[in-house]
Length: 467
Image (cartoon, rainbow, N blue to C red; front, side, top):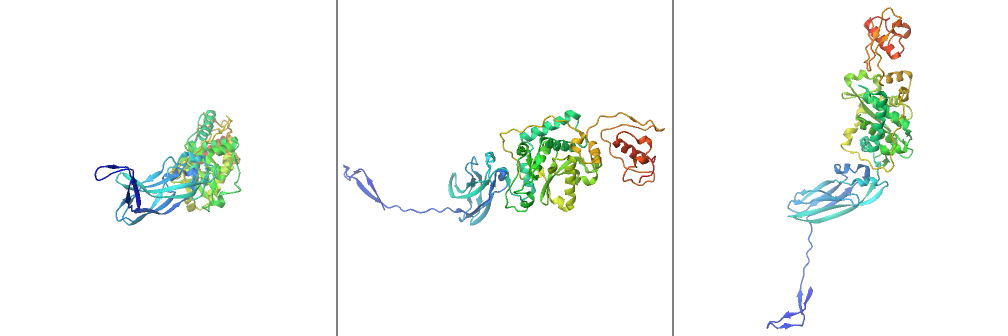
């Protein structure tokens, strides 16, 4: 019961009275219950480095109920104050007397990459009811979630590392391009068909001369936490590794992968037991695999391409050492298990889009160091010899062997494919004849040329039978 006083009133005889009139009014309040409501809200912890992923991949689920006998249009919105410019909204049409589970997605602002530590944030989920052109908030729920700073992740799969492979990051692009331009100026060519192999060699050598070193992660090693999805690990961005000049296996892997991808070389991630390493596309097809100057067990055939494994933790040694270690890790894996553990970076980017923060400190590009054939090849003399074939050579027009009664003349080309060893007896040879058994016509200065001439003579049946 409510009483309302009126300042003045007009009496029946139309005379105005100064006495206030009191009118009793009885008001009844009726609660209006929304036909839709939020039954359950489940939100996951958020990771700043994967903020682009939340626009396509759900960050949680919401159970929505409709108690009305009619269909109801009820838009669902999600908002994270300070890290979103506006709420993310998705339309819903709820069937009569129904329950629906809805995936929550969000468009976070790139400024979230400035978060470095784990911080609690209040997430808001609201459900609106549309009636014509009017819209009213039917129900709103708040839930506290943890926002992990940049670089943090949990290992649901090795493909998540692709979010840190940032080939378009300016420090990565400047480092890769300046390195390859320096090599181009010295040798005037990056060679074919082993162009990708050359680029991989040059970039790894540039990291070595830049002073990048491998330091194992004693706190959260990949081997211990990759099997536990609840443990939070940390990966440094490529620009950070170039600044700090140190990193563990996953840090160096994403750095090397970013440099290769910037140079146009496709890469893939391998989840080995307790370890992660890299494969890169050699640019050579399966049919032309014989053109690579190494034995078959040193590379991997995937589809129609030949891929080369690299253990980047050997960055302080040589490219041959990194290649050899990668090949040994591939050999330790079962063939079927290998393909299940390989993820192409380009495919992983479709789920985990890369994003790189802006660093105030500038990365120093490599100085104009002088490339040598033994700088990155290293290893044994035989390995140095085979890899040096990939490096562009000065052309030699003719090689003459004057002591022989029969003059042997050949042209030195940049990339001669290896010839099969077929002796006069028609049996295949596993290796060329020994130097002592070779005629004097094959004793040229370059041992690589000697091997080629020996193969040619062996094929024509002009040398002793092969061992």
